[in-house]
Each structure stands twice: as C-alpha cells, then as structure tokens.
Image (tube, rainbow, N blue to C red; front, side, top):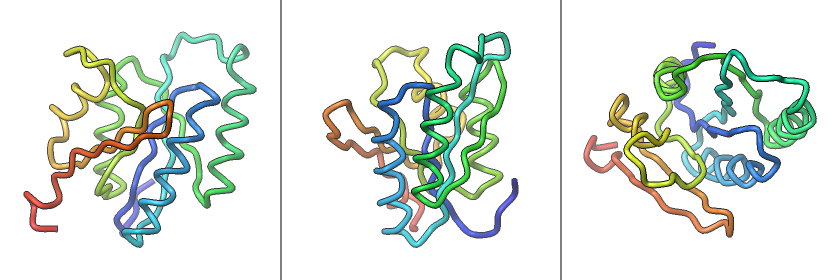
Length: 138
C-alpha cells in the first residue's frame, strides 16, 4: 500500500521472538513521528499451516503497536522488502541481527536499498543501527 507519510518498517520472520523487533520499530516510529508497518516475506512454497499460530501472534502484536502486518509471498525476500520500503517511504527498517554472511537478508537488502537505515535487535534486545540519514541530510 502506497503511503505519503514516511514510515519505519519492522521486518519479521515467523518466530514468536520477532515481537521484540515490532516493539523497537514502534518506539522508533514514535521517535521519528512516522507510520509503522510490519512486513514478513514468506517463501511461496512454505507450509503455512505450520506457522499460522506464529503469524497470528505477530499480527496481534502489530495491531497492539498500531500497525498492519503485511505478508508478501516471494522467493527473493530482500528484493520484495526493498520494493515495499520504497513504496511506503521508509526511513528505516528494523530487523533481527543478521548472521554476517554475504547472503544474509540484511546484507542483500542493504545492497538493494543503501539509502535506508537499518536497525538490528538481537535476542537480548540490544539495538544496533546503521544510520544513513546523516549521509542523506535527513
């Protein structure tokens, strides 16, 4: 959905623990006076019945944070996420901590959308930010 107001996008998987990502994204959206979006990109061949409880839980957490949760079915999660964040004028995405590999979601996303700041939240709720706003003059 195309929006006019800048946003913060929480990029979540299907793990219950992704609630920490939504909570951090909610705080950042409030700090920047932005809309909050929650995004999950799922492989088109996944057995969704096995993850329905997790998705329902994350959807509830999203609603409590004042956001809609969008699910995109794609085999190229970084590309789908980059398209979504641009369409929603995202200033920043919030995600889990990447594994450091060159093929990780965040490394590939950063190559596709280097103008978007990235905040990572580890399992202990420590927050790490790659902030490109200062380079853009925002």
